[in-house]
Amino acid sequence: MLPMLEDQDRLFINKMAYRVGSIHRGDVVVFLYPHDHQKSYIKRVIALPGDDLRIDHGRVFVNGHALKEKYVPPRFEDDRSLPEAIVPDHQYFVMGDHRSISSDSRDFGPVDRELIYGKAAFVYWPMEQAGVVR
Image (cartoon, rainbow, N blue to C red; front, side):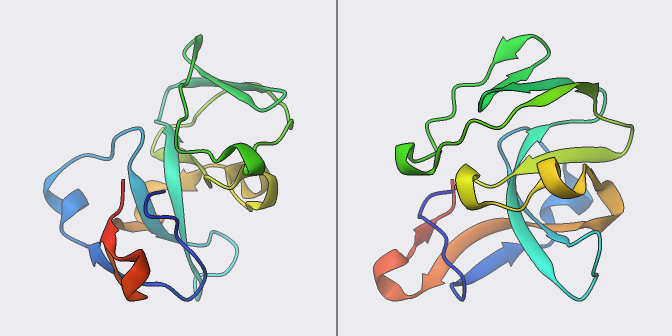
């Protein structure tokens, strides 16, 4: 996620994005943590409902194609694997860009659409991190 998001950063969240549009692979979404709806997480959408997903020693394959993940910093790559699975209807597989330290769908499973409430748009604090989230 660019700029690199850190804990306690302040950002604008576009809460209208998914009321009028669709969630796309690569979007950085904000959602309620599935096991505690008092917490919000920010992760990147890796696979959509119906996608065939497999992770082989850190390499992510969606619908048989390896993803080019330039947003994952080399120092945060990992070698975890996940067997092939189909993402269920109305759910999204999300992963953090800091793979080696991220709690994401590899741990808590795909995220229900109803828990996703916005798209990360712009970091405004701290000022040296200000910028559009990509």
